[in-house]
Image (cartoon, rainbow, N blue to C red):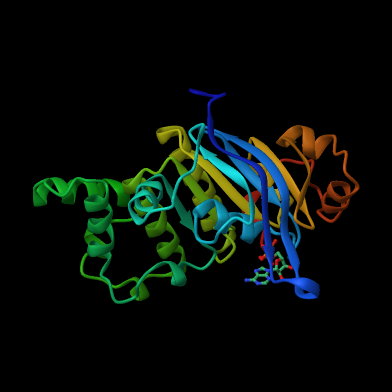
Length: 272
Ligand SMILES: Nc1ncnc2c1ncn2[C@@H]1O[C@H](COP(=O)(O)OP(=O)(O)OP(=O)(O)O)[C@@H](O)[C@H]1O
């Protein structure tokens, strides 16, 4: 893999505390991590372990109480609106619920056109923009011609998920944060989406960070797994190391909850 060892995003002592006094919750507790360029990472933990809070801090949606994040080896600076916008060109997110990801009253063409403009390709001709939009749609097995003039609510859940990935294909962020992106769809679309994400990484060398409670999914898709319990990383390493040779009790328990994790996944039969 190109740039295998170059850090893309790292964190030192990253902490988030909500509330004060006896209402205080330490949602994320001094976590250290180093996500490399082109790496697929899963952060696995049960509900309430702090995954979403870390996700939001990385995206710059909530403040960090303590600790520091580094992007491309430099301290991440999002203090001004201008710097925040610059950072957001490099990092994008896809969420569980595709309905939450789109403004339902913005037509699909406009959604895709906005991505082209955001990439600084505003000056391309209409024809060139149409070629780019069609290419992005075909990357995710959608037909642009079928989508023009439609609103997101006129698409199926699976089509919306794929449209979300078409946006990412156009935006080409350095980092993609994915919050259980496949949980709303059927097993067949699920394997397609996961394979598209792998293809996207191979084509763009994007760093992809999943947060999931599903250690089986993490094993299938990731190079590296971080296990999160009560706001702390209790274990991390290559997917094979963590799954085949788990050290933390918590990891062992998560694995024992999943039947047949050691066998290669048959995605077509794995349903939530
Ligand atoms: N805005 C908030 N105010 C107070 N406490 C919060 C807030 N957001 C999260 N928490 C608390 O922080 C802890 C971690 O929550 P978080 O949502 O990050 O966990 P999670 O691992 O993402 O869970 P899930 O898988 O259910 O989404 C929980 O105890 C939660 O109640």
